[in-house]
Length: 79
Image 1 (cartoon, rainbow, N blue to C red):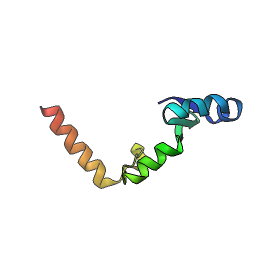
Image 2: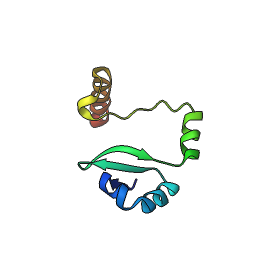
Image 3: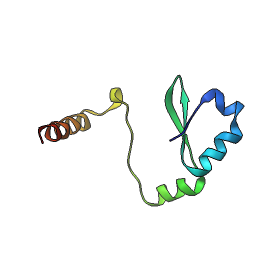
């Protein structure tokens, strides 16, 4: 996924929209991805599919998901 800084959005909006036409683009602030720009068609397709996936940073990860993640990692590492 291509990334543009928040400052690039105002300076290079044409490049941003051209990139977003091909694939979703991350907008970063302080070097961390904060937003995603994508075509409305891609957004509608994801919405229509009922895509309920969520992304979390490690400090936001709910405890139940953190435990599940650790359990699965331990299983994979043991294999």
